[in-house]
Image (cartoon, rainbow, N blue to C red; front, side, top):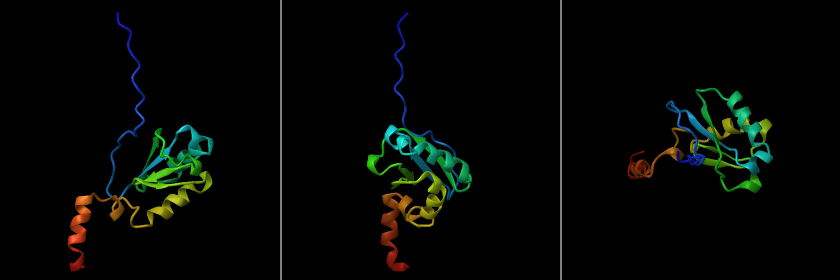
Length: 123
């Protein structure tokens, strides 16, 4: 019987059902960020944010800002140097910024942004 090869570890966050206006928070759990408190950041966000505010996902792929970690991505906007005890407050502060919100311009596709720019003179 042939020996089964182990499957490579999938480092992408698992998709979950997302509600309109709900942010996606990805926490880098790569070893360097973990040494700086990323596991506690992840735990605090999971516990401190409501499901209406955000989905919090672990990501094991490095965000490439290790020196400034722990790092998170809020709707794919990287936030560096997040302190575990301030993580929930920091995320809520970032989400008040229109470019970071799930329904803000920062989360729109280029096609949608092109349309916004084309119609900007009508505003």
